[in-house]
Length: 267
Image 1 (cartoon, one colour):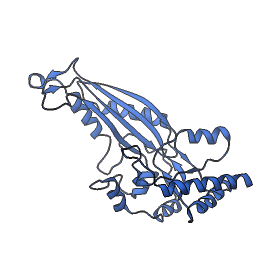
Image 2: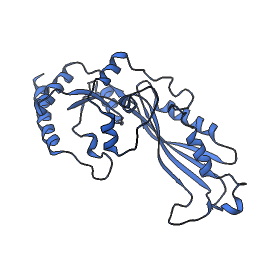
Image 3: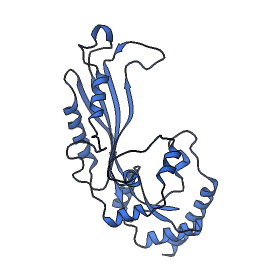
Image 4: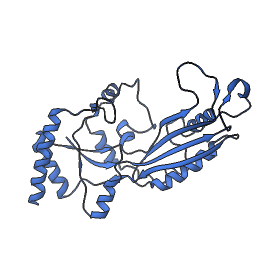
């Protein structure tokens, strides 16, 4: 079992690239009219360098770097890169050079394309020169980063990368702050005891790569610490077809939560 002590923040963007007023014949106009799909591909390719770092100027300025103690704690966790690769069915793993897989997942900011739309995508061939192209892009943020500041820097960088002959519009869809809590104090002690009671073993402290913006709001508004406890596994296909949870973890989670309520009531 594990207790989550940190989550990444989020800045979710849409990039719209407009070329001609309508789709054109690529044979009649290709090579003279700028192709928005090509332009968007060029923009996206310019968002990372060859070492996996995000190229947005100032993007890393406010990132809170891990202490040696925090990095050592992550290295000590039971984690096998090959097991993860097999579980997700990927031919290999990659990311920012100089950081472990868990560090990339939990405590380093990222930028990912979540969706692309342009041109003809149906069966067979259609030699279209598209009038527009769109990409949905999300950035996961870490402590120190402000999602509103990142949104602004992203938009400015995309506009710099855009070639002549197209217009670009960048829209921020939604965002939220990162969150981190030092795993100390009565609430975390109670959570440790509860998880041990539910699963028969000591929990470990982990972080999550996803985002739950309201967690920080709870902490700030209510003035109380937040503890996140989940009972899913990496192979449960979160947000994917056949999402599941093991019966063993489900039952263990019930025991742990019941014990946690007892622990909190006794404080």
